[in-house]
Amino acid sequence: MIYGLYALAALAEIAGCFAFWAWLRLAKPVWWLAPGLVSLALFAWLLALVPSEAAGRTFAAYGGVYIVASLLWLWLAEGRLPDRWDISGAAICLAGAGVILLGPRG
Image (cartoon, rainbow, N blue to C red):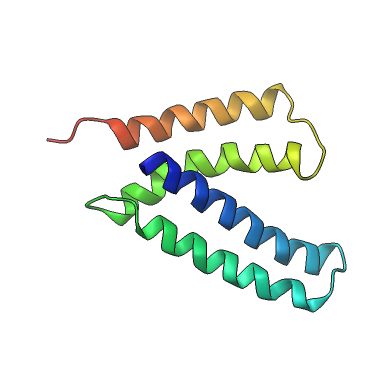
């Protein structure tokens, strides 16, 4: 369930941020901001549903998922293939997120 929440949160955040990017950098109409705001609110709600005793740990672990999801967006939505440095960096970040998320707590 945690992985699904992180994946959905990442999709919502990236879509929301892209709506702002498109409005500001790609000259899309201002109404693009409305679904962007809804998407960003959905992101915050989904991330708040992750079962955790500390918000900071939830956000830190999410960071690795966000990086991987951003590179998937780069590839699937923007049509640009991530290079070996993108992939290597994402793998390192995802490993770090795993340590944060799955590490034993005392």
